[in-house]
Amino acid sequence: MTSGDGIRLNKFISDSGYCSRREADAHIGEGAVTVNGSVAGLGTRVMPGDTVKVGWQKIKNVPDNKSDRVYIAYNKPVGITCTTDQNVAGNIIDAVRHKERVFPVGRLDNPSEGLIFLTSDGDIVNKILRVGNAHEKEYVVTVNKPISGQFVEKMSSGIPILGTRTKPCKVVMQSALSFKIILTQGLNRQIRRMCEYLGYEVVKLKRVRIMSVKLGTLKSGQWRNLTDKEMAGIREAIATSDNSAAASPGKKAAQKSHKTAQSKVPPTGNAKLKSGATKSGPKKVANTSGRARSGNAIGKSSAKPRKPGRRKPGSRK
Image (cartoon, rainbow, N blue to C red):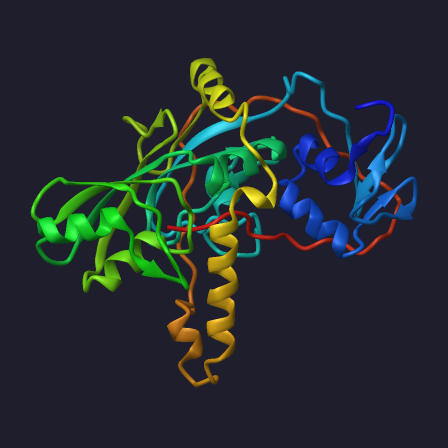
């Protein structure tokens, strides 16, 4: 706990491992967070000795060295949805089956597979995800027809999608139908939209690296703890990272443009189908990996603020 002027409420909640800072802001905005029994606002600061609750759950302070935090790498299979909402069939929380409360760092859309981080350290999420911090994510993509040098050049130089233009990136042809792409952005279904713009359809999309962490031999549906060396590399990379919204103005503008465009489209009977909704969820995938590390347990309380809903953090590919 920080003394003096205290610590911002959203940071206190995210540091505890309850959720990301962005989700904490949503809970606060919904009136679901109390400090010392009173409903708190977005500007509230937590002082030593204060009692903070989200819904029924009391939020505990985290050690300064975050020794109780969990950081894992998961090889997400196709069909698993990157949401913490356990009412969604095939959600990533049920798939991982970790003993501690964890949440995904960013997203991979349902038809995509590969490396994704999960953690109980909410403060690290924005620092990794913010596009302005330029942290690399590497993918191997297979498309439905042969690619050319012109395709590689156009993908590399930027594609107009979602009311913006994608940042220049590295694209390398792997075979007649596949290529490797390294992004520092996380626009909604970015790679699929880029390919669609050029007249291609993505058949398979697999993330094989985030920053310095590689998927390696981790099997589909399995997870492992990040090593000390990997965590040291991540902490070094985010040491000067900005976790404010200003760090990703391009992404914010693109999301605003996308929402504006959607609001101008008249509703039709096929609207749900166009959005990618399906009638049935994917099957759950059981964890086959090793043991989880222990962390703080969050107990029940007698306060009765409105129970918060879960939000979907991050972006998809």
